[in-house]
Image 1 (spheres, rainbow, N blue to C red):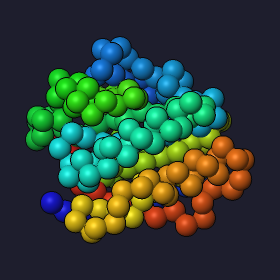
Image 2 (cartoon, rainbow, N blue to C red; image 1 turned 45 degrees about the vertical axis):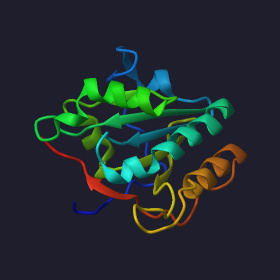
Image 3 (tube, rainbow, N blue to C red; image 1 turned 120 degrees about the vertical axis):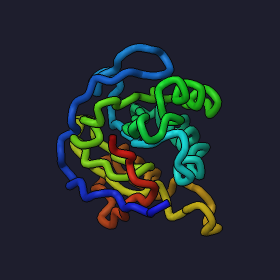
Length: 184
């Protein structure tokens, strides 16, 4: 398992639009349909990555803590099912239900959306303001599997708190680290 850092995504970049299958509801959802009134969190994740598994419970807490504050959340899996069939839509549905995801879990079958966001790893996190301009792209927090740092979501929570308070984005945005997106 090779560690990959997320690619740079400049603050102020407009969120690329999408229209993808939500593996939980069975409906296609667009960026406009999931965006929050005050901000939007887009997470590139998958079912099997140990880095995602390590933070899954915090992703649920984070969404539960901020969804009622006007922040929309969505997860997208862009992994190739040719190489990683366990990341396919039917398994995504099961995984989302098992984890109790309070957000849609979308399937990027063509991987076009991962390319549009320049997503590199799972997990890869993006936060956008009400105008869908990037205010944060980086790690959830400094915890990684095996490093004994508790999962807290501190970096994303600080960024979301800044967004909701109308203050400047975090200056020191450390890249997310995880498994590479499995390109098909």
